[in-house]
Image 1 (cartoon, rainbow, N blue to C red):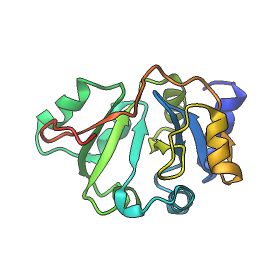
Image 2: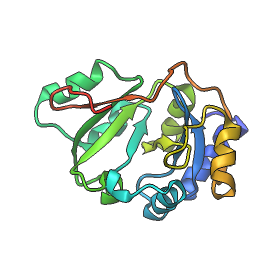
Image 3: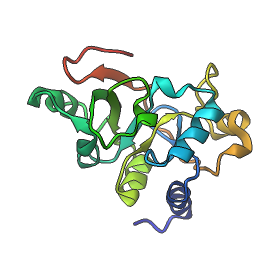
Image 4: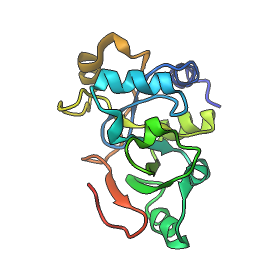
Length: 184
């Protein structure tokens, strides 16, 4: 595990139930421990986002995502593995390990296995995925600079991790694992 104070603070923030702004492939993400209902509820309230929409989870390795996905056939996972790790989010049927505050009104879970070094370091250290939603208020532009995230989200965030974004120019594609069709 890294001795970098920034990653140590990010890890501690997630482990203690706090909210974290962190770099992703294209924009700054807002995350927390997906298993912590109080943290997810705070995140949704800050963003003014209804729980019914569901949230994306981001992982460092497919092994972290596997327990959360129910595969209807081997092609579901094969489609995702062609793009992971990378800037692609795939929607799978959720297992019972995914809380309803993550799935929202759906019976599915959106998962991404990231190649971003900050995300990989964080999720590797935690040993599990985290929530990944854009670090902005609903209806506002996603933050591409840490100052934008701070201006929109303010003191409600326990930790702002200012590290370089990846090279992607837009939010990740979201596709259905069952057939590969695009949702975004």
